[in-house]
Length: 241
Image (cartoon, rainbow, N blue to C red; front, top):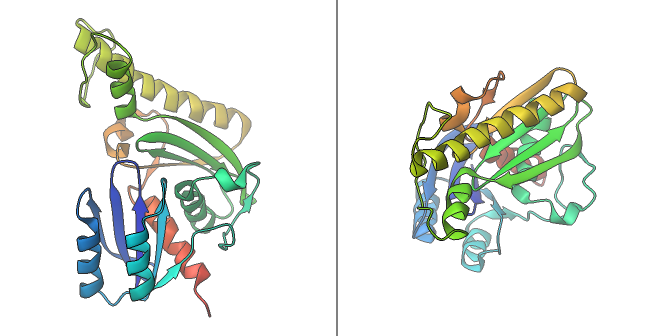
Protein backbone atom coordinates (compact mmCIF):
# COMPACT_ATOMS: atom_id res chain seq x y z
CA UNK A 1 0.00 0.00 0.00
CA UNK A 2 1.03 3.60 -0.62
CA UNK A 3 0.87 6.55 1.75
CA UNK A 4 0.69 9.95 0.04
CA UNK A 5 0.94 13.24 1.93
CA UNK A 6 0.23 16.76 0.72
CA UNK A 7 1.46 19.50 3.06
CA UNK A 8 -0.29 22.69 2.01
CA UNK A 9 -0.39 26.19 3.43
CA UNK A 10 -3.38 25.38 5.66
CA UNK A 11 -3.86 21.62 5.96
CA UNK A 12 -1.96 18.37 5.76
CA UNK A 13 -3.84 15.95 3.52
CA UNK A 14 -3.17 12.23 3.72
CA UNK A 15 -4.38 9.28 1.69
CA UNK A 16 -3.79 5.54 1.64
CA UNK A 17 -3.96 3.72 -1.69
CA UNK A 18 -3.94 0.03 -2.48
CA UNK A 19 -2.31 0.23 -5.91
CA UNK A 20 -4.68 2.80 -7.49
CA UNK A 21 -7.68 2.25 -5.20
CA UNK A 22 -8.24 4.95 -2.59
CA UNK A 23 -8.65 3.30 0.81
CA UNK A 24 -8.62 6.31 3.14
CA UNK A 25 -8.33 10.11 2.89
CA UNK A 26 -8.19 12.60 5.76
CA UNK A 27 -6.98 16.07 6.74
CA UNK A 28 -4.96 17.17 9.76
CA UNK A 29 -4.04 20.53 11.26
CA UNK A 30 -2.27 19.49 14.45
CA UNK A 31 -0.36 16.48 15.84
CA UNK A 32 0.02 15.10 12.36
CA UNK A 33 3.10 13.00 13.22
CA UNK A 34 1.03 11.04 15.72
CA UNK A 35 -1.72 10.65 13.15
CA UNK A 36 0.74 9.44 10.51
CA UNK A 37 2.17 6.93 12.99
CA UNK A 38 -1.37 5.68 13.64
CA UNK A 39 -1.95 5.17 9.92
CA UNK A 40 1.35 3.31 9.57
CA UNK A 41 0.28 1.01 12.40
CA UNK A 42 -3.11 0.32 10.84
CA UNK A 43 -2.15 -0.20 7.19
CA UNK A 44 0.68 -2.27 5.64
CA UNK A 45 2.32 0.73 3.94
CA UNK A 46 5.28 -0.10 1.71
CA UNK A 47 5.84 3.15 -0.20
CA UNK A 48 5.27 6.84 0.49
CA UNK A 49 5.69 10.30 -1.02
CA UNK A 50 5.39 13.84 0.32
CA UNK A 51 4.44 17.03 -1.51
CA UNK A 52 5.32 20.09 0.54
CA UNK A 53 4.75 23.69 -0.54
CA UNK A 54 7.03 24.96 2.24
CA UNK A 55 10.19 23.64 3.92
CA UNK A 56 10.61 19.90 4.40
CA UNK A 57 9.66 18.38 7.74
CA UNK A 58 12.67 16.40 8.98
CA UNK A 59 10.70 14.52 11.63
CA UNK A 60 8.20 13.34 9.04
CA UNK A 61 10.92 12.45 6.54
CA UNK A 62 12.78 10.39 9.14
CA UNK A 63 9.61 8.54 10.11
CA UNK A 64 8.76 7.68 6.50
CA UNK A 65 12.35 6.69 5.67
CA UNK A 66 12.36 4.36 8.65
CA UNK A 67 8.96 2.78 8.08
CA UNK A 68 8.50 2.91 4.27
CA UNK A 69 10.24 3.24 0.93
CA UNK A 70 10.06 7.02 0.62
CA UNK A 71 9.95 8.27 -2.97
CA UNK A 72 12.03 11.46 -3.08
CA UNK A 73 10.08 14.26 -4.75
CA UNK A 74 12.97 16.04 -6.45
CA UNK A 75 14.20 16.91 -9.95
CA UNK A 76 15.06 13.27 -10.67
CA UNK A 77 11.52 11.96 -10.13
CA UNK A 78 9.98 10.34 -13.19
CA UNK A 79 6.97 12.33 -14.45
CA UNK A 80 4.43 11.31 -17.13
CA UNK A 81 4.50 14.56 -19.11
CA UNK A 82 6.93 16.87 -20.90
CA UNK A 83 7.65 19.84 -18.66
CA UNK A 84 7.95 23.06 -20.69
CA UNK A 85 8.03 25.32 -17.62
CA UNK A 86 10.97 27.71 -17.98
CA UNK A 87 11.86 27.57 -14.26
CA UNK A 88 11.37 23.87 -13.55
CA UNK A 89 13.07 24.08 -10.14
CA UNK A 90 10.42 26.56 -8.91
CA UNK A 91 7.40 24.54 -10.05
CA UNK A 92 5.59 23.37 -6.92
CA UNK A 93 5.33 19.67 -6.22
CA UNK A 94 1.57 20.11 -5.78
CA UNK A 95 1.26 21.41 -9.35
CA UNK A 96 3.49 18.59 -10.66
CA UNK A 97 1.22 16.04 -8.96
CA UNK A 98 -1.90 17.62 -10.45
CA UNK A 99 -0.49 17.63 -13.98
CA UNK A 100 0.74 14.06 -13.50
CA UNK A 101 -2.79 12.95 -12.65
CA UNK A 102 -4.15 14.72 -15.73
CA UNK A 103 -1.43 13.26 -17.97
CA UNK A 104 -2.15 9.68 -16.86
CA UNK A 105 -5.93 9.92 -16.57
CA UNK A 106 -6.47 11.99 -19.74
CA UNK A 107 -3.35 11.47 -21.90
CA UNK A 108 -4.82 12.54 -25.23
CA UNK A 109 -6.87 15.51 -24.08
CA UNK A 110 -6.28 19.19 -23.44
CA UNK A 111 -6.71 19.61 -19.69
CA UNK A 112 -6.96 22.73 -17.52
CA UNK A 113 -6.64 21.96 -13.81
CA UNK A 114 -7.97 24.58 -11.41
CA UNK A 115 -6.92 24.03 -7.80
CA UNK A 116 -8.88 26.12 -5.30
CA UNK A 117 -6.85 26.22 -2.12
CA UNK A 118 -4.92 28.90 -0.26
CA UNK A 119 -3.96 30.05 -3.74
CA UNK A 120 -5.86 29.43 -6.96
CA UNK A 121 -3.60 27.70 -9.45
CA UNK A 122 -4.32 27.11 -13.13
CA UNK A 123 -2.26 24.45 -14.92
CA UNK A 124 -2.62 23.44 -18.56
CA UNK A 125 -1.32 20.41 -20.41
CA UNK A 126 -2.18 19.73 -24.04
CA UNK A 127 -3.25 16.57 -25.88
CA UNK A 128 0.42 15.67 -26.48
CA UNK A 129 1.01 15.64 -22.70
CA UNK A 130 3.11 18.80 -22.91
CA UNK A 131 2.80 20.96 -19.80
CA UNK A 132 2.66 24.58 -20.97
CA UNK A 133 2.35 26.34 -17.60
CA UNK A 134 -0.45 28.31 -16.02
CA UNK A 135 -1.06 31.01 -13.45
CA UNK A 136 -1.37 31.66 -9.71
CA UNK A 137 -3.72 34.05 -7.95
CA UNK A 138 -4.87 34.60 -4.34
CA UNK A 139 -7.37 32.11 -2.95
CA UNK A 140 -10.69 33.04 -1.38
CA UNK A 141 -9.53 33.29 2.24
CA UNK A 142 -6.38 35.10 1.18
CA UNK A 143 -8.55 37.78 -0.44
CA UNK A 144 -10.66 38.18 2.69
CA UNK A 145 -7.51 38.35 4.81
CA UNK A 146 -5.72 40.86 2.60
CA UNK A 147 -8.68 43.27 2.68
CA UNK A 148 -8.58 43.19 6.47
CA UNK A 149 -4.78 43.28 6.83
CA UNK A 150 -4.06 46.06 4.36
CA UNK A 151 -6.84 48.42 5.46
CA UNK A 152 -7.65 50.22 8.69
CA UNK A 153 -11.37 49.52 8.99
CA UNK A 154 -12.41 46.55 6.87
CA UNK A 155 -13.33 43.48 8.98
CA UNK A 156 -12.01 39.95 8.47
CA UNK A 157 -14.93 37.87 7.23
CA UNK A 158 -15.43 34.16 6.70
CA UNK A 159 -16.56 32.53 3.49
CA UNK A 160 -20.28 32.96 2.89
CA UNK A 161 -22.62 31.74 0.17
CA UNK A 162 -24.23 34.75 -1.47
CA UNK A 163 -26.72 35.33 -4.30
CA UNK A 164 -26.33 39.07 -4.84
CA UNK A 165 -23.98 41.25 -6.84
CA UNK A 166 -24.60 44.67 -5.30
CA UNK A 167 -23.56 44.80 -1.65
CA UNK A 168 -25.79 47.00 0.50
CA UNK A 169 -23.45 47.08 3.48
CA UNK A 170 -19.69 46.93 3.97
CA UNK A 171 -19.82 43.22 4.81
CA UNK A 172 -22.04 42.47 1.80
CA UNK A 173 -19.70 44.52 -0.40
CA UNK A 174 -16.69 42.49 0.77
CA UNK A 175 -18.50 39.19 0.17
CA UNK A 176 -19.61 40.37 -3.26
CA UNK A 177 -16.14 41.55 -4.20
CA UNK A 178 -14.42 38.37 -3.09
CA UNK A 179 -16.90 35.70 -4.20
CA UNK A 180 -18.10 37.30 -7.42
CA UNK A 181 -14.54 38.35 -8.21
CA UNK A 182 -13.28 34.77 -7.94
CA UNK A 183 -16.18 33.44 -10.03
CA UNK A 184 -15.60 36.05 -12.75
CA UNK A 185 -11.87 35.30 -12.70
CA UNK A 186 -12.33 31.55 -13.08
CA UNK A 187 -14.91 31.87 -15.86
CA UNK A 188 -12.71 34.43 -17.60
CA UNK A 189 -9.59 32.25 -17.43
CA UNK A 190 -11.52 29.24 -18.75
CA UNK A 191 -12.83 31.36 -21.62
CA UNK A 192 -9.30 32.49 -22.51
CA UNK A 193 -8.11 28.90 -22.77
CA UNK A 194 -11.17 27.84 -24.75
CA UNK A 195 -10.55 30.68 -27.20
CA UNK A 196 -7.10 29.26 -27.97
CA UNK A 197 -7.53 25.50 -27.51
CA UNK A 198 -10.36 23.23 -28.60
CA UNK A 199 -12.15 20.60 -26.53
CA UNK A 200 -10.67 21.31 -23.11
CA UNK A 201 -11.46 19.16 -20.10
CA UNK A 202 -11.78 21.38 -17.03
CA UNK A 203 -10.86 19.79 -13.69
CA UNK A 204 -11.82 21.58 -10.49
CA UNK A 205 -10.15 20.48 -7.26
CA UNK A 206 -9.02 21.81 -3.89
CA UNK A 207 -10.72 22.76 -0.64
CA UNK A 208 -13.04 25.41 -2.07
CA UNK A 209 -14.05 23.42 -5.17
CA UNK A 210 -17.35 22.15 -3.76
CA UNK A 211 -18.36 25.67 -2.75
CA UNK A 212 -17.76 27.10 -6.22
CA UNK A 213 -18.71 24.17 -8.44
CA UNK A 214 -22.32 25.21 -9.08
CA UNK A 215 -21.35 28.85 -9.52
CA UNK A 216 -19.11 28.27 -12.53
CA UNK A 217 -20.81 28.29 -15.92
CA UNK A 218 -18.59 25.83 -17.73
CA UNK A 219 -18.89 22.04 -17.70
CA UNK A 220 -16.52 20.91 -14.97
CA UNK A 221 -15.09 17.59 -13.83
CA UNK A 222 -14.85 17.96 -10.04
CA UNK A 223 -12.42 15.79 -8.07
CA UNK A 224 -11.58 16.91 -4.54
CA UNK A 225 -8.70 14.40 -4.20
CA UNK A 226 -7.13 14.89 -7.63
CA UNK A 227 -3.78 15.99 -6.16
CA UNK A 228 -3.62 12.92 -3.92
CA UNK A 229 -4.41 10.72 -6.92
CA UNK A 230 -1.53 12.37 -8.77
CA UNK A 231 0.86 11.72 -5.91
CA UNK A 232 -0.14 8.06 -5.82
CA UNK A 233 0.34 7.71 -9.57
CA UNK A 234 3.84 9.15 -9.15
CA UNK A 235 4.56 6.55 -6.47
CA UNK A 236 3.35 3.77 -8.74
CA UNK A 237 5.47 4.95 -11.69
CA UNK A 238 8.59 5.49 -9.55
CA UNK A 239 8.62 2.20 -7.67
CA UNK A 240 11.72 0.14 -8.31
CA UNK A 241 10.78 -2.86 -10.39
